[in-house]
Length: 341
Image 1 (cartoon, rainbow, N blue to C red):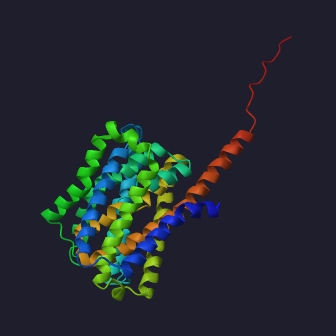
Image 2 (cartoon, rainbow, N blue to C red):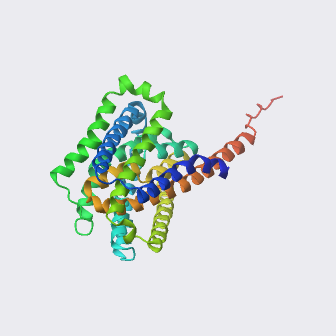
Image 3 (cartoon, helix red, strand yellow):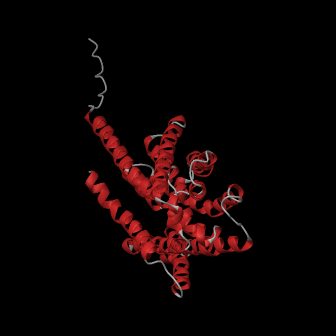
C-alpha cells in the first residue's frame, strides 16, 4: 500500500526538487530572463483557462446545497489558516523572509485537483469537494491579495497597486472565466485528454517555479537560506499541517458531518494551492523576494501530498471495513404472525 501511494506522489515531488536544483545551477540570465518570464506567464494563463473549462456546473449545483460545509472550508482556508500564520510570524522564531513566506502560504486558497482526488480515494462526497475547492480558488483570486495587502504591507513588501490587480485579473480570473464560458464546446475534449491536462498542470507550475527560483538564486537566495533555516522551515510547515488536520477533524465532529462530508472538510480545508500561489507571489512581491516567499509554499505542498495520501487511504480502509461489517449483519426478518386457535 505504501509503495503504491508513494509511486503516485514521488515523481512530481522529484520533479519539483529537480527544478529547484536546475534553477540553482543554471538560472535564467541575460536574454533568457524575458523569454522565461513570457513563457511562465503564458503557461499560467493556459493553466487557469483549462481549470475553468474543467469546472463542472452540474457538480457545483449538486454540491452547493451543502452550504454549511462550504462555509466551514472557506473559514478554515481564509480565517483559521491566517490566524495560525500570524501566530507563527508573531513568535519571531522564523527568519523574517521565511516568516513572510509562511504567512503568505496561509493566505492561499485550497487546491482543486488533489483535494478532489483525495476525497474520492477516501470515498467522500466528490460533488461537494468539487464545489468547495473550486469556490475557494475562485474567491481566493480576490481574497488572497486583499489579505496579503492587509497583513503583509510592512514586512512583505506587498504592493496591491492597480497594476498588481490588473495582472491578477488578466492572468488568473479572465482565463478562468473564459475557459468556463467555453466549457460547453471544449469541456468534453479536455475531459478526454487527462494526460495532456496533467502535463500542462504540472509543467506550468514547474516552469514558473524555475523562473521564480532562478531570479531568486541570482539575487542571492541560498545565501539567505541555509541548511538550518531550511530544516526549521520543514518543521514549521509540518507543524502547521498537523495542527490544521487535527482542527479540521475536530470541526467535522462538532458539525456532526457524516464520513463523506468529513472527508471534504479534511482535504479541502487543509490544503494550499501551489498553482495559485506561484503566479500571485510573482505579482505581489519583488522579483528578488519571490523565491524565498515560494519556498514555504513548495515545502508545504509536498508535505500535504504525502500526509493526505496516507490519510485518504486510511479513511478508505475504514469505510470499507464499515461496509463489510454492515454486510455481515444478517437482515432482521419480520416476526411471523401469531397463530390463534
